[in-house]
Amino acid sequence: MLQVNQEKSPNRQVYWLLQIGGWFLYWLVSTLVNLVRNSEPEQTALLWEEQVALTIFFVLGLAATHLYRAFVKAQQWVSLPVPKLIKRLLFSVLTMSMSISAIYLGILWWLGTIQPGNFEGNLLVIRLLTNTSLVISLWIAIYFSVQYFQNYRKAELAALRQEAMIKEATLNKLRSQLNPHFVFNSLNGIRALVAVDPDKAREAITALANIFRKTLQLDKQVEVSFREEMQIVEEYLQLEKIRFEERLSYSFDIQPAVYALKIPPLMLQTLVENGIKHGISKLAKGGAISLKAHCQNGITIIEIRNPGQITASTDREGYGLVNTRQRLQLLYGSGATIELTESDESVLTMLRIPNCA
Image 1 (cartoon, rainbow, N blue to C red):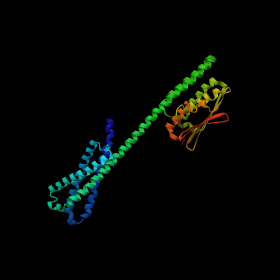
Image 2: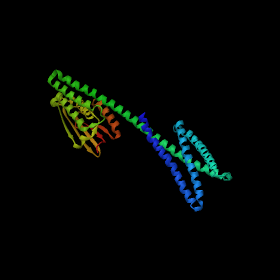
Image 3: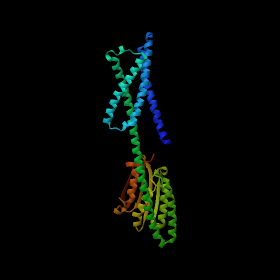
Image 4: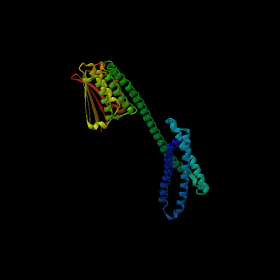
């Protein structure tokens, strides 16, 4: 309840500021016109009469439009279709103008400011109705314009919130797929070591536990620093080094400024894992994996190269690349890309992320 009141209070304050300020501006401008029109000394009495009449009109207009606003809110006119709303607004202008004019003339008559002779030819009534209709029409136009703008902004914010929630849910789903995939591949590698070299299998389990600890720390984050991601990549490669021994080597060439940049967690680890699974593990002599990263024209360019060839089994449309592509699209839109190319019996995975200042 407290939160609702806090949200409504600023709107109420703005309304009263505009309501009183708008009607006071009308009173002030009309007063200046009266002063210019009745500037002669002998017109002082007439000036005071017109100021009294203007003040009465000011109070009536302020009260009538405030009551009208309460009625409109209660009936929820803002949510009506435009054709129905226009009909009601036209009727409102006519009804309010006639009501205000009638009460206004009645008060002036009671005060003795006007006499029956003032109504000859109905010129006074016509001028009053015309003036009142213009003022009320302007008030209604401004009020509903503000209401429609506020509703548009609310709808826009609601759409953005919904889009953010959908993106967050999708990212969480994609991120949740990473750990099972990684665990499955790692356990398969450790299983192969158990019978052949139990000591190395124990080392691998310890390394896997270290990786788990770090990934759990990053699990709730949408983005992590490049430095944190590289720590996981290095530990993963050390884990795989236990399994592949001299068949696996790796190197990094990273521009210092890149380390502070933010990227999706486990993205690089997934791509390096792809390179080992579809490249090095299929080659008897193994090979080397290289990872390079640098900034260029506001784009972070990441290159991961591994031996092998692009085939149907390279996961070109499989889990690893599809997952990474979807995460990049959700976080950075069309500005982020991932491509696979083949040259000199090696596969190059290149990422471009628009996050470099």
